[in-house]
Length: 310
Length: 316
Picture 1: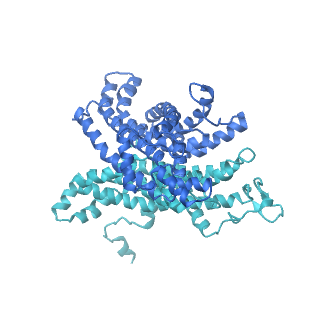
Picture 2: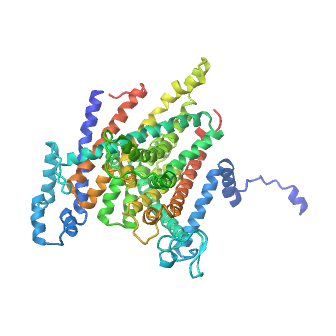
Picture 3: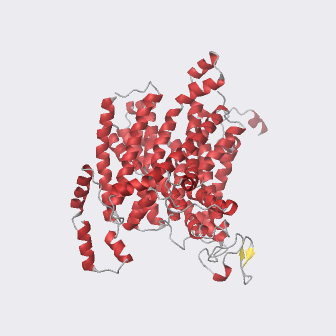
């Protein structure tokens, strides 16, 4: 047996275990972009919070139940009857701030992901089609995208929300539709440059159909910008949701949307209790910050032109 | 060049027409109209009164007739009369516009003043500590929502300095100090968000241009580093910056809806929101038309400025 092992002439095949395929790139990424990796970690935590909060698992108290006797308690206090503990205090209606922040994070994260799920596939499909077909069709599709983009985003969102009525899901459709032009533009650009490659011509020569070239050859090559785009679309969607809620045309009370928390209690009680405005504000900022930072790190990692020395 | 400009201007017309139809349609789909909005406030609902009122305002005509009436007026230079303020739309816009342009103008200046030096430094010292600091700050600038930054201003302005944003109208030339107090914080908030975007795009393009052959040539012939960076690299990195500035003009108008309501500035953004809630059709249509025209013209100017910045680009 021992002899057989030593004299084995089998060629050494590089093993591609799960560890090599998943952990090595992850490790390399976090070594070169520690901040980006830290932000990715934060995002993972935020998503876990979001999922748990959706099922009411980690919420210490009911985020919408108010109790007059517990109004405006400070950080780390117990309620007047001594039964409930408030890590971050309570708001002007005696609702637990910590639970409200967790629930608000859930709303923001779900909103952002929902917008990305709708706008990125739709936008990419439009961009891919438009660039691939080219000619007049491309021109007309791009004019339509122009027309949507020419209109100030918030102004159109306000108009759509006033038609559908205020509320998170009405705002959701407005934001999702208005987010389509950006992925369409970016993907169109990438497809246009990918189309110039020799391998597209080669694929056509061996008789590939248009559909096959589009989905099997070009699409995988524009996946990289799509991932980067996803992080920006998410970030923009979260900010827009917060803005609509802040203006009072998004989430309606008592829904604990982060933007709504800023207007409802934040602006009224800021002199005595600035934390009512600052805590939700910081939560939104951190969410959006980590998404942008993560997107930047991925972009740098995927774009070798800007790397290294001159 | 002239032919290019003319063809671009001609191409604007269909876009504007489509967008006026969209705005007009959106407004008519919205539940309730001006009469309903007024009646619920003032004197309960009286069907007969409402009908008379609608007839006075011309709201009883079919939507298509109303549209052509409005567009016919626009062509003749008559933008209609605001239902709610009972003044010509052009007058309402003219009173609100100076505040918004002042806000946006100062914001752009502040944004550029922050973004250009930081963007250049961060590209020249790529991957140094300064670069990391500048990039983090710029991403913070993008990530912090406008309204949160505005509220922080108000909270700490009040707590530390006893400052409150002055309410009401403060004209630039009659009450410069009040006007500045009202506009400057808003402009800083808007400018901070913009400078983040400009800085990032400037850094990326500077990194690209600094790797070009002509930069090596400029260094080789013995120019000082400052001349290389500003005369040769910076000028060529400006094109994307101008593009972003063009986009931002549209965002400023949208973004100023938020800033104007936080700081109590009576600009276009606030007038727009009020007009939408009041269902003041002529005013909403007028403001939307104005914004669309401003954006389209800015886009044209941006495209034209490319050939000025980079003589290799020609329009025929």
